Image 1 (cartoon, rainbow, N blue to C red):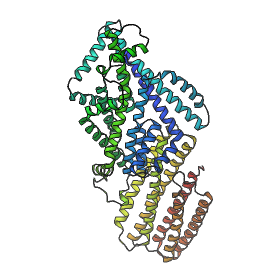
Image 2 (tube, rainbow, N blue to C red):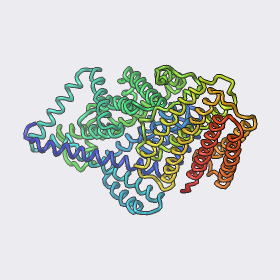
Image 3 (cartoon, rainbow, N blue to C red):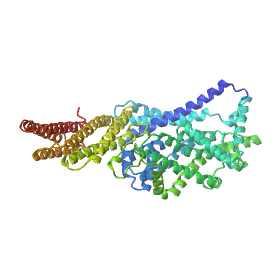
Image 4 (cartoon, rainbow, N blue to C red):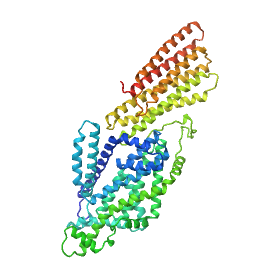
Length: 612
């Protein structure tokens, strides 16, 4: 490229990467900070403000504007669907709102052409920095948000400065700079010479750009800055923006590989929604762009800028005297470069608004479509029967939020599910024990499968909680994670105990081991105490439901211990008096397992009360 050396080109490229890196890091810090400050409030909003698709739309818009990341919002939606706090239909409305909310980033970036962001970036960082060193979590995380916000603006400013301006390069005395501009503009003009085919080419470039930088906001930032600095015209930029709308869904699609069923469905719904929007926009691409001219004044093509406007622009920038043709051409180009970012942001916003208006009525159809596309599969490849507890499965979540805050809703829902499975298994043991005359082989097989599911679920929950601990959590949230880790371990042990109880009951009736009526009545009373214990901790597992009463739990545990000692003493006495020795040994094993469940249940209550 002329006299521009390879080293100079590398340095320029690294400056661009550096500006982009500061922008992305600032966005991440800002997003994490606001999630820590308002994470609990956002979860409450998400759980209560999504009764229908329109409330869901508003919720997605609000949350995405707060966290400045549609990806974070989409992941939060997936977590809530997994935790059964949102239905799939409600989640589609929130995803639509997130698409609209992410357009705010474009407006922020477009403002870079109106005033110097670098002048406000450092003062914002300066205000936030003292807060970061405060011990109180609210102040600390507010400081992180402010520092991230300042870094975002600073990164945008550096990115703009790092991307060379076409106008300044053309005025440069260095012929190498001019040759470089000519080469790049020649290539862009060649790609733009295929008519409507050019729109498709730049749309694909937008998809690839978004996948490359893994952020539609960053891709939008690059597109607007290229437009501001005169490298691309409005039509090219608009086509790239359409590609970015597809690219952000491809990223979510890739992230959902290996994820749970609802994550896959949400990713497919997002993909189908955006693809449908881009398809109709391609059909109306040129009329839609023409409509923008009527909505927002300001030329986006140099031939539309009048001589008078160019002279006024030159005067505002300190030019005196009679302008030459070259001066007028430069002024017209500068006016267009200033107008394009705002028109591009309007294009992005109106496209998403129109897409929502067209497709929000089809939300139920979209939900049914993705349910048909993504079917649940069991290990044998068959679809489980609806409503069957054997269909209660967990494939593991491949989509995790960038902070542990947003993942806790998912974890709490899955821990609740784990508790429900263990209780169902214990009730299954009671059912098998009390009906030895009935063939319960299929039911016992189902309970055994549930025990395997228990282990899988406990493993996945533990992995997710460990992921949470690798992130910086607010003090109470970190305590909650530690509590959930301990609860998960105890519930897994309860599941193992229930499985052994079912096998003991199965052996009793399979080998025709009979117990006295009085003994069977004792087991029933004992099992009711265990179920009372399960009811106590199960009703307090979700956050916000308060802590279970430790004194009440310890009283139940004392009754269980006393019952086991008394019943075991009676069993030992009967062993001496009767020939039914093997039946009594099974009975003692059942008592031991039930007592262990009682101990585990007390540990769950202690964990929920943060008692070591």
